[in-house]
Length: 279
Image 1 (tube, rainbow, N blue to C red):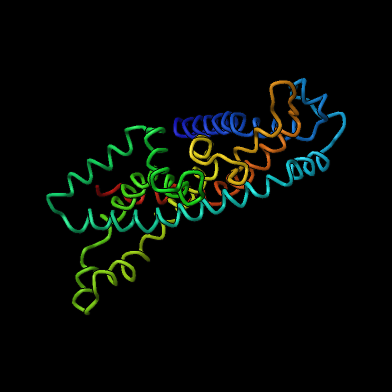
Image 2 (cartoon, rainbow, N blue to C red):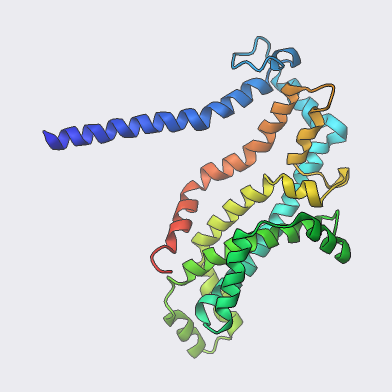
């Protein structure tokens, strides 16, 4: 009887927790959707209510057409930045993590300390702008890609280093005995085994970079360099705001990262915990 009571209690706790989590995570998206399909007058009231007049398609078209289809340009820029930065994070993060794990030396502690500093110390905006201006990369997509790589590289290295520690060194030695060069050992033996953590890194960093607001605001000014998050300014001003279009824009910006997170949620958890056995 006590076992059944414990099982029933655990089931009830799980149901309550699931309902609570659903309310916290689902209701905001429901509110955003309801606001996005309302008229301008209804949306200005900020009520959690069913719209009296549905304007989904009209609001969608208005948002896409705003400022000569700026949202489409923003999607293109954000996609280029995300793909370029994530690709560099995967390659460089895996390389540095492999060297730190497989080739111990006196410099490893210094490099590891710099990586930890990169995680803890917040970035300085003004000196970074000076550096970008000196390199001729300020207000450019390429400069924004390098900024995202610099800010995410420390996390990527730690993630790869933990996962590589679970791969036996015998694989490296066997490949070297067969005549493989160090580059071949990494790209043909080690890198294919990093698929779980690579998927995790791609999903996590893609969502973070695609949703980034502050870095493009600081380092990527100009209408031709607009990203998806910066398009939210299109419908807010000092004297007038179109909240129905603003929430429609938020809905369009939120859907792609949300779908990625939903479909790759298991891979994220598996990749984050894969290197937890060894450190």
